[in-house]
Image (cartoon, rainbow, N blue to C red):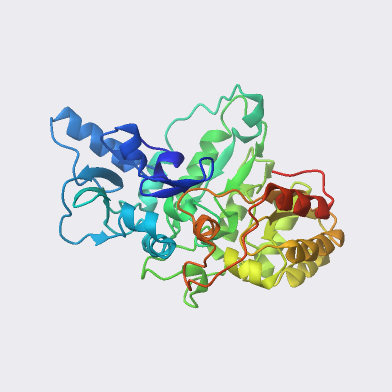
Length: 395
């Protein structure tokens, strides 16, 4: 089994719908093996082993059941320990990583879930996958506007606490080569149903392209050595715009405003925005933003820099109901939104398995510090926080 749901339920996890901790989905489903993350390399290895009648133990990027723990595995708190102690659940959360071999005991004195660390993906791997001969023929009206999108990179260095990307695609950037992306565009323009517009050029955050670094296990976004010049991305955008047959190259993925510089923002706004540029500040309260791990950057300065360019508008995405958000913080957000034109979408925080914010929701603790935090649990309060904002559109 595989996919997003399986990936985020590979160990003991909090299930919002049942409002309780559940064991690994490997146990409930009776599956033999679980593939987490993107899965291309795992699927090929599984197919090869099945073809040659070999067992499926030890494949990077998978989880299996085992009666013991092999050497060089980090042992998580057991299922029983996290049931008995919310602090142990925090300890487990702090150990979650795609980059290590992990083991969790699910039965007393026997039975483990083993996670084999994720395989390494390289630019040449992504080049191969995304240059496969896709037809780009989409019949569904709901996703019709994305048949000519281009994925430029994989992973995210943002590490937002409410987001699952870190445990899916990883917390490092892997960028495709410029040559591969150009080849994909050149094939695209020859398709009979291509009308000249590239619907989206990007990834989880479009402006993280080219920010590859695998030198350590630290958070890249905080590293002073990370190349944040956007030079590779600016060069790529210029090259794609110059290809014969390309009329417009849109960036609809959204960007991390705390990473942009003046040159990139100018190129983006003048050539790649269709009316509105999406950014996600998520909140305005400092304490809430720190709990979200979204406290970097200066939103007011970014808005000012954007407005000076005089092209298009900003569209803002916010979140309510996140751990740490009481009525006072909701009022603060409501006052900020009144000053903005396009607070287009407000998301009500919904706990998803294995994220840091979900750990906060279940435990009422900050897993890093073990300090108590306020969590809005009642439907009445969540509804009231929505009402205070006075917006019509919610996700």
